[in-house]
Every structure is written in C-alpha cells, then in structure tokens.
Image (cartoon, rainbow over all chains, first blue to last red; front, side, top):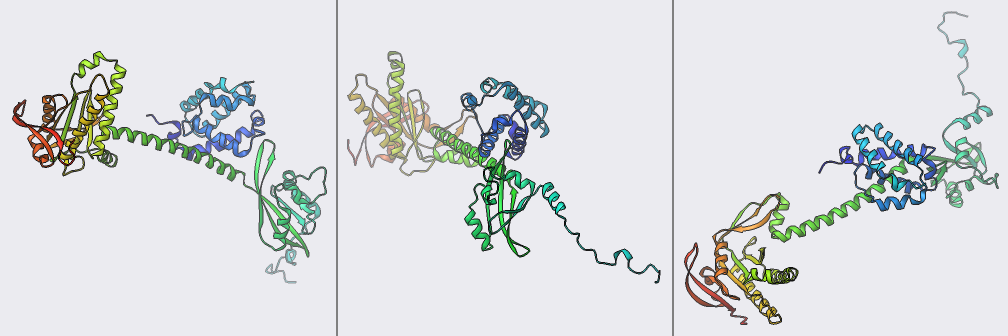
Amino acid sequence: MPQSIYERHGGFATVRKVVSDFYDRALSSEVLAPYFARTSMRTLVDHQTKFVSFLLGGPASYNDDHLQRIHARMGITLPAFDEMVLTMLETLEDHDFTKGEVAAVEHELRSRQSLIVTA
Amino acid sequence: MSGTGAGPDPGADEPASAPELSGQFLRDLLRSVRGVFAVVDAQNWQPILETARFFELFPPDPAEPDGPLGARIEGMDADRAADRVARRRPYSVDVEVSVGPRTLSLTVAFHAADLAGRPVVIIEATDMTKAKETEYMLDSYSRMAEKNARELQREKERAERLLLNIMPRAVFEEMKDFGSVSPQRFDQATILMLDFVDFTEMTVSRHPGELVSELNDIFSAFDRIVELFGCERMKTIGDAYMAVSGLPEANDEHAQAIARVALRMRRYLQKRNESRLEPWLGRIGIHSGPVVGSIVGVQKYVYDIFGPGVNMAARLEAFADPMQIVVSSATYDRISDEFTCRELGEHPIKGFGTQSLYSLESEWKHRR
C-alpha cells in the first residue's frame, strides 16, 4: 500500500503543527471566523484535528453522509468554502508540502464541495 | 580644587536614585503593557489599578460598573479566593474568555501583597490558550488513535481466526513469532481420509445450495469430533475430509485418537441417515506412518502434510466399502489392544504392494 501524505510527513508530530496553524488562520479570517463563533474551543480543535488528519490520509474517517450531516445547518456559502480551501492549501504550502500533495488535497476538498456548500 | 581628573565626576556627586514614578507614567504603562494584571483592595475587592488588557478581557458589567472586581471573573469563587488570600495560600482558577471569534484560555492567580501598609490582592492572568489547544488536540488525536487501535485489534483477531482455519494453532504461533514455518517431519502420526460414495452423482442430482449446506453441516460436525479427540482437521477437498493426529504436537495415542474419531464420524453419519431419504455414505481409510508438515504456497498458502503415509490412507479410503473404516496393519498394531477389528486379508494396494488390511468395528471399552 502506498504511504499516505500523513505518513510521509511523519504522522501526527508534523500534522499537529498544521492543525494548529490552520486553526489560527481560520479564526483570523473574517470570512471563516463567524462560522465558528458559537463553537466551543474544545469542539473546534477536535473537529479540525480530525479534519486535517482525514484530509492527509491519517487515522480519521468521514463518509459522505457524515460530512453532509455535520455541515447541513451551517449555511456555508461558496465564497466561504473557497476561502477555507485556499486557507488550507496555503497552510500546507507553508509547511513544506509538495505541489503534488497540495493539489491532491485540493482535489479531495473540491470533490466534496456539494456536500458542504448549502447556502 | 585639583583638576587631575582622577576624582569623581562632579555630575555624579549624588548616588543615582530611581526616578519618581509619576502618575501619568503609571497610567501610560498600564495602558501599553500586554500583561493581564490588576491590584485590588483586599477588603472590598475594588480595583486600585489594572492594565488595559485586563480591562479588555474582564470588562465590568455595564449594569454594575463599580462592583467588586471578583464579580468580573466568571468562574471564580470569591469566598474561596478571599479566604486563601487572607491565609496567604495559593489560589488560581482557569477561565475561558471570548475575544471576537477566539476563545482564550486563562489561568487567573491571586496573591496577597502589601501596598504601603494596606492589604491588597494582586490578580494576574496567564494566557494558556496554546497549551489548551494542544491539550484538546492531543485528546482528539488519542481518541482517534485508540479507535483505530481497537479496529486494528478486531481486524487482527478476524485474520487470526481465518488463519486458524487453515493451519494448526502451534503452526500459526510459529508463523506469527518467526514470520515463517519450517517444514517438520513427524515420525509418529496417523492419517484419516474420508470421502462420500457417489458424491459426484449427488452434485448433479441435487440442488447445489442444499448439497453444500448438507456437506457444511457434516464437515462442521466432523470438525467438532476431531477437536474433541485432540486431532487436527487438515483440509477438505470437495467431499474429501482429512484429519491427522500426532502433529504438530506429539501424541503417543495418535492411532487410538484417530480410530475414535473415525468411529464417531461413522456413528454421526448413521444417525443422520436414519432421518433422511438420501443417505450420505462415507468411506474411511486410516494409516499410521511418518509425514512432513509444512506451509505451502506464498500468496494463497495452506498448511499441508506429505509423505507416503498420506497416499496410503487415501488408497485405503478408496478401497473401503460404504460406511467401512479400513485400517492398515501399521495402525492395527497400535490399536488392536483397545479396538475390535476384523481381518480383511491381504490386498494389493497400488504403490504399496500387498498389504494386510483390517476393518475397524468398535472400541473395546465402549462397544457400540
């Protein structure tokens, strides 16, 4: 079995830095921050940890139903989704992920756009 | 005055003293530092001074702007804080404060101090947000990892069960520990071969689902019998069933164990046939001799045994009449003290010359 991006980058030791950085950037973004306003820090960190681990092929899994259910009431717009994708890709770039890996993650994200964007 | 220049600088005649801190300077300082602290009167907890950052994070309630400062820190136990401070014991409380979309995690500590003879409390908050984030992230990660570990464990147990279907436990343990299994010769072993009369005809005359289901029932029953007597089911090929005793663990009573298995198998078939229109008639051949046991195959591997003894058992099974158990003289010699056998005379067996054969009838101690 080929190694996942998660494994190639040394597992959680590296991924936790990406999670932490992405969390900061998301909360600093005027577009994204309002979506998190009513979420507790513990829930948000938990969500982001699973989300980043999942995206990079780590030990978390979401099926399409699950993704759709948890985003259904958030009213996410296409610009907000685009901003999230861009923020994630920039975070990965700044943590020395290769162009190919960043593109693969973008593909993963974009392929689920219709499950997330509901407004 | 000597002007040698060796004396002290006239400008430094008086020792340098700390400059007086002006009220304005203090106000500027409290506004500009990033530290989060305040000093309150220990009697009434009214603020004496606080930094701008403290005010920002713990703003007064607009409805009660002059209330005690303790009321502004949600989650703090005012009585306990006052009590601890009075006894000069440590007290701190963890609080979460929202600033815009962010939640800051702060540890607020209270210390007693003295301000020109007046008891005061110094309140200082330390930003623990990053540490909290890391703690929550680790919680999240460990839950994920533990969940994965549980799933892996279940998967491992499932794989073990599958492997135990195709090899004896002792062989499986060797493979698990060393990654491979070395072929091994077992000098003392007894092999049982069974197959069914006219099975080929049954496959075309009966519904395939029904046939497989019946075969499955019968072989499952055989598996239980084999296990009951400490033998090993080696494999099934179509309607043929092969069991062995004496490996992978040695068993001095290998021939007796297999003889008991054979009698129980026949008894099971007889009982089963009584209640059915179409009988399953088994033929059984038994031989005792050395065999080699090994894992064979790379991708689709299986534990198997080889040697002339295996072929001999197969030949005797083919020789047997329906519901007859034919044993070779090698097996007969080992079991004749405990089992009733009937002599069948000498017969040519392909590849083995002429052999004295016996039909196993019953066990002495438990005549059936």
